[in-house]
Image (cartoon, rainbow, N blue to C red; front, side):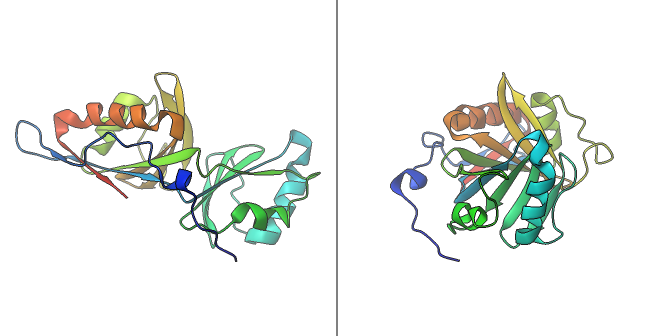
Length: 204
């Protein structure tokens, strides 16, 4: 695979203005840890309702059998985390600057589906710690019990009419994928929700 250098726009963080560091609560506790980061590679793969079978066949050529079969499921692949975010839609999250868009277009023809680079349009806020689920319960109308929202699953959700995608990484670690346009304010919302438990913020 050919890796391309990140552009200046990719390197600019929409989180600029928030200060890293710990903000303990009145008891001196820090129950929530946040890590805000831009993403080197985000690729949207989509089709229309009649093209699902053809798209899944094309994706099998790239990923083998690691294709999430249902909306809300994920699979870890060599190219990154593959999320099924809708019946006709997948989101691929990569941790390097490999040009996944060009790679996928070699297998997914225009009459099968579309492949769109969203790397500059998405950011990630990781939330973890003993009070992370309590914090998330303030923000999202989701049942966060593991029986209802298992490890590995994703859910389309949002706060204050702004959409985002929530991914459960482990029992007490979640990734919130947000639009870069709203990332600053959404991070501020999560910080405010976590303040009573004590919160630490870092950037990566």
